[in-house]
Length: 151
Image (cartoon, rainbow, N blue to C red):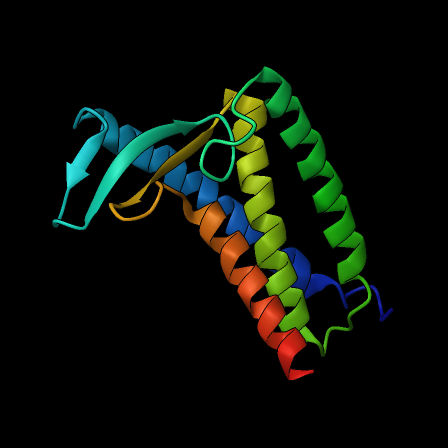
């Protein structure tokens, strides 16, 4: 545990990743409404509006699942927040990847509470449609494992 500002890199990263996710979902939703929910750019990429009621390829895709996902997200946010306090300000790498994961979870949680589903729009045709929150979570987890393998 450091001084009262030692947690600042984590808070900054989680805040900005969550806000960026929410802003992009808002503007891409408005933009895609004009084009009936889909814009193809190339043969392998498009912007596609999708209401994702579950996680990971449609798991938990019902009302009971939504409640479980909200509870799990709140638990994960709390756990990551408390875990991130272990690291000093000098350990910015840990603060950064944990902030990415936290911000991504918060971005999707906001959608789940507000809409009842998560807004996805990034569509590489060989992979399920996703959003920036999903990307932040995956990047944060990859950075976590890289750090663990190097330690």
